[in-house]
Length: 92
Image (cartoon, rainbow, N blue to C red; front, side, top):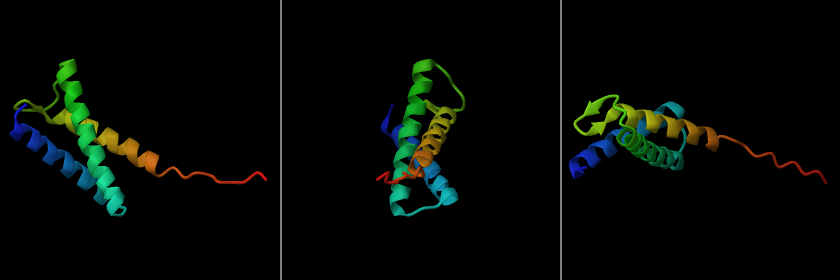
């Protein structure tokens, strides 16, 4: 992959993370988490596309479809895990 392809993928992943943050809300730390999760998910989706030979929506060598799906899955799991509250009930 060339540098322009990597930068385009990063821009799209960051855009997906930012839009997810607008929909779900939260503070600055949550925004950073969403951006990181989105980038990681996009990269994993792209890797799955390249390794498995699955093509969904290609833009040159970049598979936008699998990348966005991976990004949304990572964001959904990360959001779900971040909203779990621990129960600190003392049994004593």
